Image (cartoon, rainbow, N blue to C red; front, side):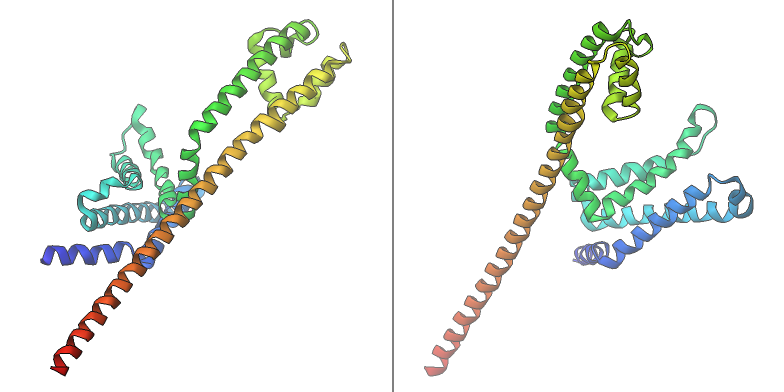
Length: 268
């Protein structure tokens, strides 16, 4: 019974708003100190203090995970975000080594990513993006197909005019990927158009298909996933409110029945 009560109190503690705010503040402070450690001037003046803050932040994260595990027990690992937090903290707990393993010390910055699991709005965005991955994979395949077909056409048409951009299939793929991002595409097009004036038809059509159509499909899929995520959250909230309302009504009916029973006994 004492264990149940302590677990209940732990749940109240770790789920309280002030506890979340404290962890968020620690994450932000730790992010600032990790950035400050990249400055030789700051390290020369405040190196010991920065290392101390970093160790304190890591200790806070370990204690927080221990409290959450104590509050939820085995159900702690049913939440993917708890797995995420555990892996991030476990990586930063690995001892710093020299040589090829010295990168482990740089991985301490991964602790900043815990902000994603702490802030509900960020967690909602990441969950929506993960939900949208299948649709994005289909769009990526379509984009790769368009890029490949366009690269083959461009190599055949412009390899002799601009060999530095379209000399072979690999060059054409890289150039058209650059054009798709909008980076200096006009320079490439103008150089080709000096020899082939009607080359603008190819470039304008390619940009219309890739940049203005296919790439915007990524945004459409992401927005649709966000809307579905919010709709599910609203539906879950409505179900919880309905369940709470039904529970209150059941208690009211029980009280009314008890009152009627007491009245009957009093009348007798």
